[in-house]
Length: 370
Image (cartoon, rainbow, N blue to C red; front, top):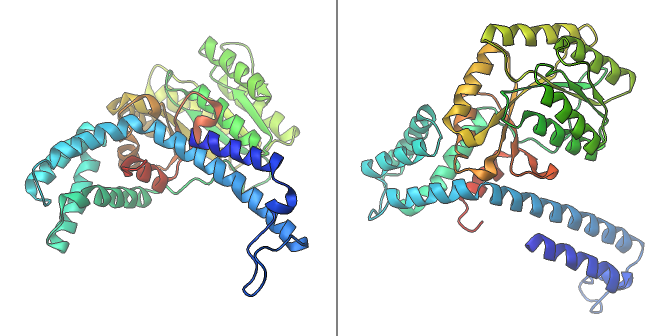
């Protein structure tokens, strides 16, 4: 709502406020009340308009993040409130209750114990910590934990290859987690960022997968390379990279099989894809992106275990966080597998896939004013 009002105000300003007044600025000391714009003032005005645009964009992004984590936040805060009820300082009983809060919020047992140990050390150091400080302490410790786990802030959708040819991403994950949808949304964001994107439909075992990716390709306006159902996925991957190189693409996103009969089959299939695309680009793939459904809670941990055992996963996207109170899974999975979370899905819109920013995520989760 606030973002919409802000946008309407910007439109009103452009239409109804003359340029000369839009550029008016406070004068240097000792001069009249207002100064009319000269050349430098016009430049300043342009910069202000650009800054205003990005502020509006940033505000919308934060609003989406806040709304997407609302259920997780509400659940966690109500549990924390019960954990500290009637207590003025953090003691062993509060820490025991907090441990239960984090475990039931799908943070995971191992990660919960690490967080509790950090808070215990802080209580021992500071001698007295009030329960009113607990949210801020949790915020700081979780942000620190995410930093240690390699979850650097992902700045926008700017995938740059460090070699000749396109940046190649193999996208893996079980059926139903939103893998193909995530590819479509990522393609949309990359194209909006000025990148030339190619999609590869290498999940040839599921009829709907190829069709779904083609629909996303048409919707976003990017080419999709495909073959007949049941074709060799490695052959599709090869054709995709070859076409992308010939077409001068910047980024290639390859959808892979979401269900194979066993871990060995999955490992062999992904290894074969790697080997054939390396005939074209020796360092490919640049990223193996594992897509997980955040709404499944502990099942997402099991999916991560299976895929990290079968192949080298280098980043993760966690989807469907807007419809669940299980957003704590982002913290636990990042900590347990030491693999950076790169993107989070916060809604059904194409703009609702966001780069993961650990501080913004934690702030949104613990900010009582959000």
